[in-house]
Length: 219
Ligand SMILES: [Zn+2]
Picture (cartoon, rainbow, N blue to C red):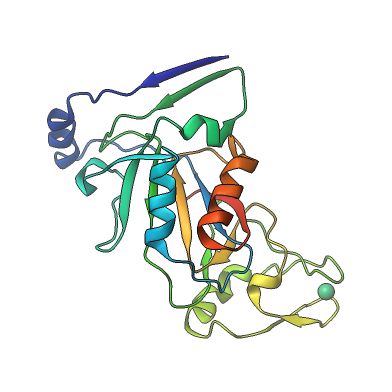
């Protein structure tokens, strides 16, 4: 196994100049999303960030201009820390992880969106229709319902196959999407390319007092 760390930054200013001149930007590779098992939980963000910094999961804070995905006004983003690879497990025999900030190309980093006021759907082009937990029937028209879910988060969704009703986050989205209020986004990770270790789940549980889960989303 080869781990090729590209830790020291490249010619960031040149790259940012070409970003402004409209260079082609590659598709989003994907992200690994960590969130609480209970999607309505709201653990303290500062405590989580402090615990991740102590474990060297995260390193220096990133300038938003260094990130091709951009960040919201209240988001914050960090470089990966020296302990990252002992807490996130990569598959494959030759792992190459770009870690230097680059406004044009994918690089591995962590983002912390602000706490959402209610469970928010994270879904992308890898997301498949969720299944009913009673009959395994699929909710084929889920994409048409997302705007309604954003406005009426407690709306129950009847199963087209068996009629059972449950809120959208209680459908089975597998690891292709999901709901949460407090999320940690690990960019840019192809779905399934990396998984959180038990040690990472233990760290999050210790910092928040509750259990965590993960899934993947590609924009
Ligand atoms: Zn059903």
